[in-house]
Image (cartoon, rainbow, N blue to C red; front, side, top):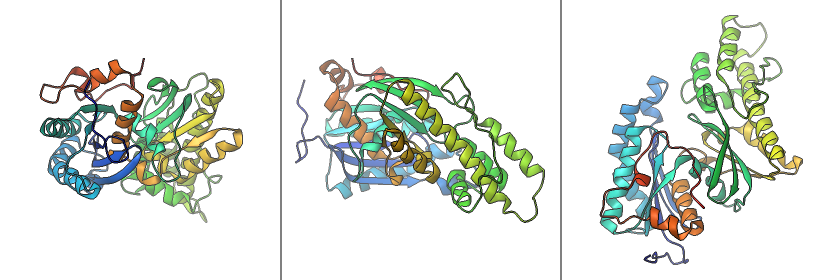
Length: 358
């Protein structure tokens, strides 16, 4: 197999392209060091719909992908990279196609390898990026929590993954968005609820913790119903109603996530836990995960700017695959750039987080 060219530090330059949902992002990473990271958000585009409209998202990606990639290369002061990586899935099919075509085009133009990355694996190893980060060793338990995912994952070896549990209905971030709309807080709902919860009393409006005993799964749709009936009852005199509701809701969601993550780590004898995904930026969830250190656990979480979708996490995940993968894996991943993409490179909106290392 042809040896990869490398950057000045001996690590290959990797361009990561992320277009799974409503952020058009690109970054250049070498050996865990971010040389550039550019994100074009579509929040303003989707705000009046109170959620992501897939057709509008894919059209916006088409408009932004060229300028975003160009800016990422300019900020990294490079004209090309040694490897191109892109989000293969899961995500919105139209959005994924835009990133896939852009990555395939650059791979062919530059004559370099092309790697498809699972979006969830990117979120896991975003915790290795940043000035205060550290390498994540196995085994570990990871909680990926966002608008589309609430997954509890066990990794017992590099490149090996087992999904312990996932949401049965709404993802945590999705529940935040829907409840924020019910409360008139706007879109996106997660940051709005976090801000209002800071001035509220979680004990004034308590909600049940949906722990689902006997399973690692999650369920947050019942909390929407509970909030609906609290709102329907009308305001109570002398109380900051919305702030208390936000504080109580946030406590119910974050404590459920933390308790199940802690229980999974203990059940599987794991000391390392990883937090990732857009909801990982939530202040209460971050405080709760930091408190797990008092339980003897080692906690890793990305810096807030890297919690939401970004190209750096995709580039970094691809770089890890190159460093840790077996020779047979690399032969399968690094297809000739001038041929049609193999099955392992086709976008898949329902792509499972599967083990790739033998």
